[in-house]
Image 1 (cartoon, rainbow, N blue to C red):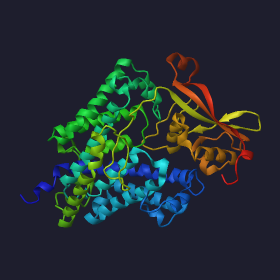
Image 2: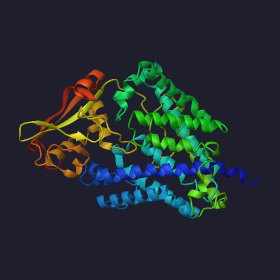
Image 3: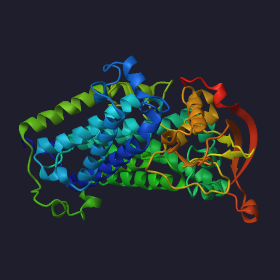
Image 4: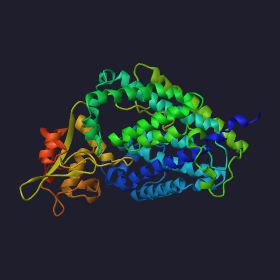
Amino acid sequence: MGWDWFWAPEYGPARFVVQRLLALCYAMGFLCVINQFPALLGSHGLTPTPRFLRNVGFRRSPSLFHLYYSDRFVLCCGWFGLLLSVAACCGVPDLLPIWASMAVWFVLWALYLSVVNIGRIWYAFGWESLLLETGFIAVFLGPAHTEPPVLVIWLLCWLLFRVEFGAGLIKMRGDPSWRDLSALHHHHETQPMPGPLSRVFHRLPGGLHKVEVLANHLTQLVVPFGLLAPQPVATIAALIMIVTQGWLMLSGNFAWLNLITVTLAFAAMDTTLLGWIPVDALTPGSVAGTAGPMWYRATVAALTVLIVVLSYWPIRNMIGRGQVMNRSFNKLHLANTYGAFGSVTRVRFEVVLEGYGTDGEWREYGFRGKPGDVTRRSPQVAPYHLRLDWLMWFVAISPSYGRGWLERLLVAMLRDERRILSLLRHNPFRETAPRYVRARLFRYRFSTAAEKRESGVWWVRDPVSELIPAVSLDDVSPND
């Protein structure tokens, strides 16, 4: 038999799809670096990186930016990562020798790891670690002119199992609304970043909301075990997960969480469903079916041992009573634990930022994705990630999430700092900066059908409190 067991040629089409979708996820990540890093984490951003690098060493946050940092260098890395992602999406690594193809995927992983490890609160999302863990395992998938190693396919399926099963467990152990099937009576309205169809989902009959919850429990607590079964059961399980993720994409904006989960699901599909993909024809110059060299096999075996050993921590977390979600147990973000919405908020609060101009009126700043203007329909943002908008949702739940940067954002408004204000969709003070700024807390809810017909509003809001009273530049230290 030899090494025949090591190769899985029937997963060639799956590898083709996984690598293209993974490259798309990387592209979204590097686009965020280009568009948002200078304002969020640049030298004059909301939470400057140079100060962090001076206080935290390489061992605590492995990143190439410990060797050299400048805002321009970060942008160069972002553009290089984006171009490399596009090249990977177009299949360029498939035309290279195995070592060069692996190098492309490794550089993408190392670049993004370098950003995440200095990103602090702005990069403390589960899908950052999920992209990194998926990306690291995918380094070893190999190019199209070699057969896919079955061990790497198994590792991707194992990762998907942990993502789904961990998310299911945290729900059942957490908020009682998941157990009494009432969670989605609230979730579509109170989720962090509603989408254009979220109001439609929220207005579905209560019985359908219960069906949604039951389907979620089935997909996350039962179906994942199908990934460990022979074909075609594994393909069917993956297909159910893809359909569920598509439903989530329609009902809200969760950055690239759904896309990367779909990416992993394709790894479980053999030619039973994907046989129509002409892999050879789509990668000119490749000769499918070639077994990789011995060094490549040894590297894949070492990867498998590494992930198996590191899996002790997420397994212990899943079976333990004090399960946590979205935590990395090492600085390389390998073998993480995942989960989402262990608690469901019943009421939606939003932080509204306002400025007071020379005309004696308070005017509202507009964000790109999060609810603000009640007449504006929530946009489709995912798989792109609006980091400031997401953090504002957390601030509305607990102001402590804004410690260290929310005040800095208000100062940027008073000083009319255009780099930081570029994170916003609408600046009502284009000519002169406001004299005062403040942060107010509102309660939001989706409009009823009658309210929508009468006034055209998507949201109805009521003031709750003043989160940060009016401040002017006279109240600000020159060093802020």
